[in-house]
Amino acid sequence: MSIKLYGYWRSTSTYRVRIALNLKQIDYEYVPVHLLENGGAQHASAYKRINPSELVPCLVDDDADIILNQSLSIIEYLDERFTTGSPLLPAHALERARVRGLSQDIACDIQPLGNLRVLNQLRETFSADQDAINRWTAHWIETGLGGIETRLQTQAGKYCFDFDVTMADVCLVPQVYNAIRFGVDISKYPLIAKITENCEQLEAFQKAHPQNQIDAVS
Amino acid sequence: MSIKLYGYWRSTSTYRVRIALNLKQIDYEYVPVHLLENGGAQHASAYKRINPSELVPCLVDDDADIILNQSLSIIEYLDERFTTGSPLLPAHALERARVRGLSQDIACDIQPLGNLRVLNQLRETFSADQDAINRWTAHWIETGLGGIETRLQTQAGKYCFDFDVTMADVCLVPQVYNAIRFGVDISKYPLIAKITENCEQLEAFQKAHPQNQIDAVS
Image 1 (cartoon, rainbow over the protein chains, first blue to last red):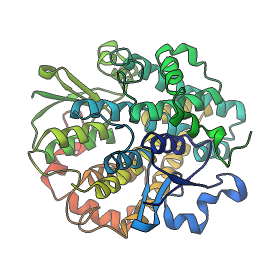
Image 2: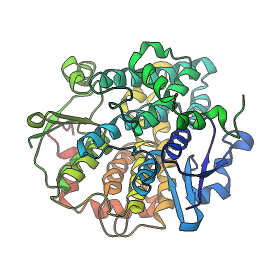
Image 3: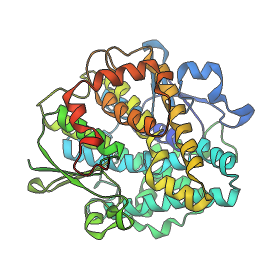
């Protein structure tokens, strides 16, 4: 396989896939798609042929004619296809459902509401200023993280699920990065804060950090 | 198993799980959670103990001490756990990734933006009137369905993926129901329109329709 990941340094869903690729010890080429310059490279016709949804990330394997979108779908594919590194989903169906559930608490209930295109639309439709945008985003992050913190009380160990890193951690760490960016006080969520700290000690997470990407703007 | 599905008739994510339960030929008890009355039963302490995220749906099996949230996670669990009915995900990893991808195009990129709590927040924060709410919702539905229609051109048959009903169809039909409710012209998406029509001829989809639920308001 010769894998390319199309993404953007600060996109939390791209960040998830970078962590997963690292945890699975898969070599890949990172292809930046600049979401802001010239109206957004995700809307250019070359990229639309890869992903008609005009969103990042997208995983492409030219050798095998594979194009996949949606970060959670990509992560599960990598986990099923590659036996290298550590498994990102547990073997037991019920545990797998819980890992997927927590991942989707982030990928369906938090991240979409603070997405760049959504914030732009709030500016356009409702003349939202930056302060209103920040409050909107922080509101959904806090609502979502509050529910997750409660859920973690019954299952968390060193990571979201006991002592194995799973797809849930792969989703949580980028969401916490985004939360801090929007001024959310993570110390209100002690389990989330501790799990994030534990994950960030792993090289797979460090290498995937937005600030360590070739398209990062400091 | 003695399964209870907590949900709301018009919630498209609950609608997805009802279809999946029917396709898998699983008996279940439907427990309505009224999202509007008295500030919303999803925020009551009894329900928060089941789902601290205060959202529907939630699948509960009291006998087995199972509580699961997030519709896609629930659907995959049912598919893995029950061999009855038809499989909702393909056997091959790459095909499975494509089905998950299309399901997430709906569950991550369309549905969350037109969720009841989000529309309420638009009213509160930006004083959005009903007309603005409808345009906001229709915008995201049309953006999302446009991308999906293009994607379907390479893979659709009678259903989203060839001739087998999958989780993608289980997500698509409720989203189309919601699209029509917000005034979107589905005839602009001929493949989506045709697939929906094909699905709606199946009893599993008919029985799951919002209008056929005990908590439906006509």
